[in-house]
Amino acid sequence: MKFKPNQTRTYDREGFKRRAACLCFKNEREDEVLLVSSSRNPDQWIVPGGGMEPEEEPCGAAVREVFEEAGVKGKLGRLLGVFEQNQDRKHRTYVYVLTVTETLDAWEDSVNIGRKREWFPIDEAIEVLQSHKPVHADYLRRLRINRSSTTTNGNLLLPQTSPSTLTPLYSAPASAARR
View 1 (cartoon, helix red, strand yellow):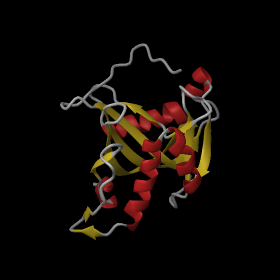
View 2 (cartoon, rainbow, N blue to C red):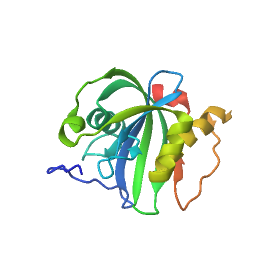
View 3 (cartoon, one colour):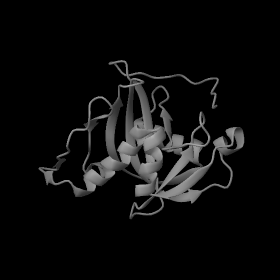
View 4 (cartoon, rainbow, N blue to C red):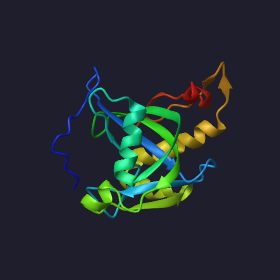
């Protein structure tokens, strides 16, 4: 399991742990996503992400986390949404889209804990994530919803997800990420 001796967990005013993650795609088509092996269960796959450092912006944390956990760099795109998880843990996660431009042969988590990474078609990734990390599968489902949503006055109209698992707090239109 991953251990960071100097890690400081940060929380927002409402007591949610502040987290950031990226859906890392092979290209702009967003048809293959990169998943990494879990540090707790190495035979299971997860979306790379983790806790935000004090004073760290969500987008910076997301980029740092994918570099540490997946060994990739890329072009940070839109904010997919801010999600709350209340069932097991009280987390608030900022989820971004990143198009991978560079893949390292060896990276921090591959060297330190033997973490693996693998590309998955979206449907297969949802299936793989559903059994171990259903919240992560919901990120990819939200990606699909965003693609098919209509916009009104620049705001996306999104259906609610079940409050018992994941509650979307905010979803930005693609143009907002470029401001």
